[in-house]
Amino acid sequence: MESSPFELKTYLQSKQLQVNNRLLLSLPPAVSSRIADAMRYSVLAGGKRLRPVLCLAAAEAVGGCSDIAIDTSVAIELIHTYSLIHDDLPAMDDDALRRGKPTCHVAYDEATAILTGDALLTLAFQMLASQECAADVPADRRLQIIHAVATAAGYEGMIGGQMADIDSESSRIGLSRLEQLHLMKTGALIKAAVTTGGILGGGTSEQIRHLHKYAQNIGLAFQIIDDILNVEGDPALLGKAVGTDEEKKKSTYPALLGLAESRKLAADRVKEALKALEYFDKKADPLRAIAKYVIDRKS
Amino acid sequence: MESSPFELKTYLQSKQLQVNNRLLLSLPPAVSSRIADAMRYSVLAGGKRLRPVLCLAAAEAVGGCSDIAIDTSVAIELIHTYSLIHDDLPAMDDDALRRGKPTCHVAYDEATAILTGDALLTLAFQMLASQECAADVPADRRLQIIHAVATAAGYEGMIGGQMADIDSESSRIGLSRLEQLHLMKTGALIKAAVTTGGILGGGTSEQIRHLHKYAQNIGLAFQIIDDILNVEGDPALLGKAVGTDEEKKKSTYPALLGLAESRKLAADRVKEALKALEYFDKKADPLRAIAKYVIDRKS
Image (cartoon, rainbow over all chains, first blue to last red; front, top):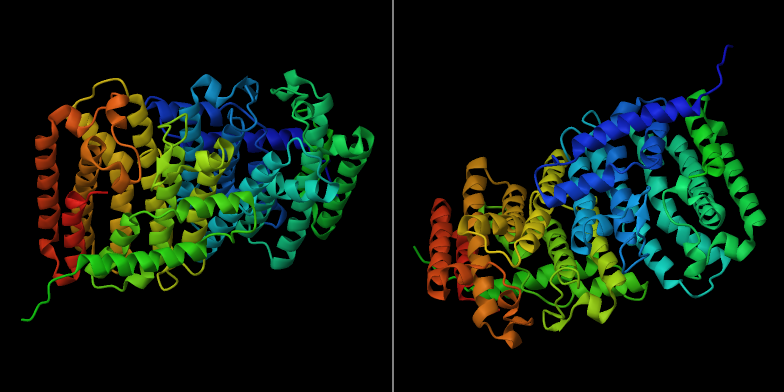
């Protein structure tokens, strides 16, 4: 059996291009209004597009075509971008730089940034419910997808995690509480990206179960590396400030475990993620490569 | 033909009770977290529940049962409440009082208020996509409802209107621009409440067309009266401060036309709304009574 090594870089570039093209189409025209302008500014500022790429790769891993998941993947990126805009606000993390550019409230103003986040969150659901989104998938399945994405993004998921994160500032929390917090704050939406991709790709419930385990583990690995990069990352590569967690006395993996132990924990999580993929054939190679990329990344 | 006069007060009380009971069930338990607590605080602070009642009344007007629209009506009220929380923020209207109680950012803090708004908006779509919501309605029709609500709430509707409203502060805009702004800011969600109610109730496209015209007109009448109450209303009855529009030099109907002319304009709008209802039988009496209530209200 012939097998060429999987080229993550080419794969990422091709998927990122597809995602960026679709994102562009999903946004209002630049000239229409201040809110449209700010929506475009934040969404088109770049970014790894990790969540949409995971969604597309999951659809492929179960043997489906990634095209069916493109709108859903883009809606999830809109939700991710809105959460960054709101998290960066002065009342929250008060960050001035994101993806190498001034954050939305710095480039515009606070009121515009709040409304722009609101608009992107709302647009995500408008997209998910539009006729074009996953048109070949039965409508009741599509309702399930919307429900899963909303649940992951809501008070039981991402928003609940962000609230708990703010609550935990200036107070030391334990490792299990930290893990629980990150499973909500970062993990829930990553999990939604992977599992909805699998569902749209026509995955069996057994396949979805394994994808779920994969996503849970890379979500945590991703967050641990995020914490590590906030200590020793290069701000120029990251496109945002470093050292901010320590300033705010945040409970992070490096703060609780030290850098070496944190790195080991992230590597263990990636191993677990790869184990969950043993169930799949080489169509899951992109997911495998992304898992390794998550801990090797510099940005 | 015997006909008893329609009792709006009793009708409103009964529908408000139904809406409030369902709202209570839609919210997370009070004890679960800070975000849950703040969500409950803002949603359960009272309010006229005008949008959900309109949604239920529209379902009845077309001959349907209002029960089928209850979850959709409640989701729309969650969206309305989120918009109030964000509009009240210091970076926006900076209001300290809402529904007679401290606004969310005063009772909690700004970060919590931003996240609480986000959580209610997300919960609305989680509800709309849940299995229980309008379970007897075909899934593709339910997707259309979600799409209509998201479009009304988004940058082309409510959020776009709020952005334009902020943009217009300290600068005089003309009457047609003011009307356009309010059709987006207040009108879009009211229209969505009425038309989705009609659709869920099984209305014909001709009926929906008339409901649309009704909603457009009472939406504007509602906003004109809101502007008038900000000039001469009783803060104790309103549960919020008055005179704030003039302080901010906002372009409003009274500022552009004077009070008497504004009142006449609102009355004309209600007449138009009632004309749109001539197409319906007495099952539309609640909608008729609500149209009159909109201009007689003191709060």
